[in-house]
Length: 148
Image 1: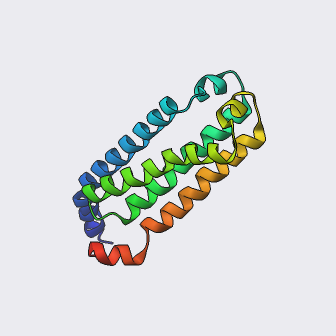
Image 2 (image 1 turned 30 degrees about the vertical axis):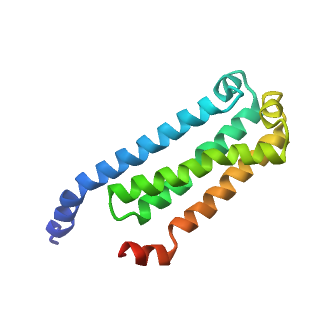
Image 3 (image 1 turned 90 degrees about the vertical axis):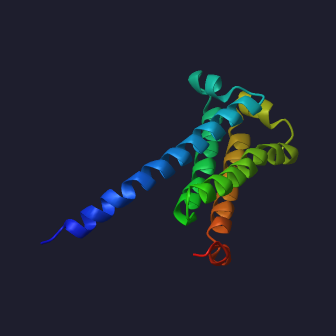
């Protein structure tokens, strides 16, 4: 069997893979840092102290940021496209906390106090919005506009 074609394709595509992975991981880590800074409760400290609400809420944030970013990776046609759509989707996700807090007053305090129901609500909002954003990025009409 001749494996030269798949090996050549791997060698040719590997630099782009590394660049796009690096950009995506950079966006992901930056978004997590921004989220930790912008939330009034210190989720990482609460998680270290064994607060299950903080863990659920932060887990929703991690998954909620990763889903649309993964979709951006799958549907982008280059690094700039990934960067633009990645920033847009991640900013929307970061704003979701503020909207969730509008519906459930005192969300940061409730999570800090260990209110699991509040954490599950926030987690559901984050993951639900992530799935919607993921679908929006994958819209076939957007792909046609991009030349895909």
